[in-house]
Length: 489
Image (cartoon, rainbow, N blue to C red):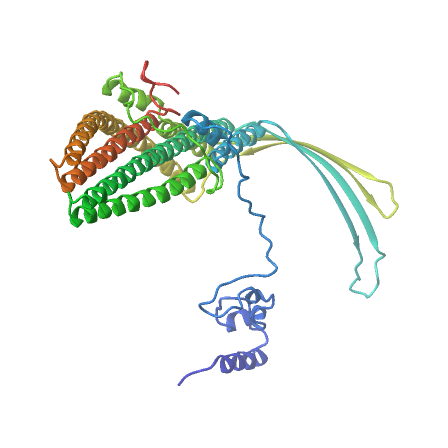
């Protein structure tokens, strides 16, 4: 038989009437809330903010969020170099602002820790008006009282607790500082990647535009030869097909240029539609050669990469936390001084003062402190392991980026030779076609070979520069290795 909640409540009320000395607390079964809380469901109308049915978008017409604004449009009067855009991005990208503010907050945290070395001073003012009746029914006059107390307290001895807290706050500044440096290098890397992606795509647009121009000339030549009876309609159709394909590639590349410009603008902290004129890519110039050996680059990265430095600083923070937890179980000696006055119903003020020492000796914390110390020791070991992991990861990244840069540079050099050969071949076949010694198919094939070679050269050069930027980022630099020393920051 099922027993309802109402029947249970009725039973408990009857039992309370029959046994008034039995506390109601033992008769009412345990519930998730106090009995009076169950009388009214949702008295504060919290469900009023979620009235929309299931599956519909939530909104609150009274909600006022902070105003969201896009960056202002920036007009550039001349073509921007990579160095200029990187400098602008470091000052305007939100990522660098977030990292900078976190660093400032960590610096304030050091002030919080050092404030423990100073005494604390507080002023307390209590005012009360009260009245009570005696058991005989007499009323005691209304009592007005006011008391002011000034208290000063200072920790005399804590066995290294404040020192450990200060070291922990200082280590947090180191971590935030290296995280700030990491944010700067990441922003610089993103700008560099987007920059070379854009100028590479712009170079492809110029290459495709040249191909369109050449294919238009091929179509004109085929039509002239057809009218002269020296070519068939097949030559004209082949020329038209090649021209249409070149125009499609050009249109697609132009759309990609607009997309890449938006990515570059976003990495600089600008709105995506902000046009940025940039210096065109010199497709005849190879990326700079890296003079240092890969071993010296790996050693440089393990000493200067901000991620590795932040991992090392985390060990300092873990050690300070361990010392702080150990000091929590040691005695603390404090001094206190207080003085005040009390005023009551027009009587003369009474004064009070006190000077005292307080010694706190932890005896048993339910094993809380011992477990906390063990946890801090494990976290310190974990921080050391994380440093080793980050160091190995950065070393591998530097080694792989170095090999990729060298390979891309060699590929770009070979692609330059392929472009020169394709240009010479196209010129020869075009001359042969004009005198009838070659076919339109051969001419179009030579043109396609040149286009492919140009595309490969541009991709290899931009890939080399992007990988060079990845290498610089792994080395902890803002910028690219330079042609003389191999580095610049």
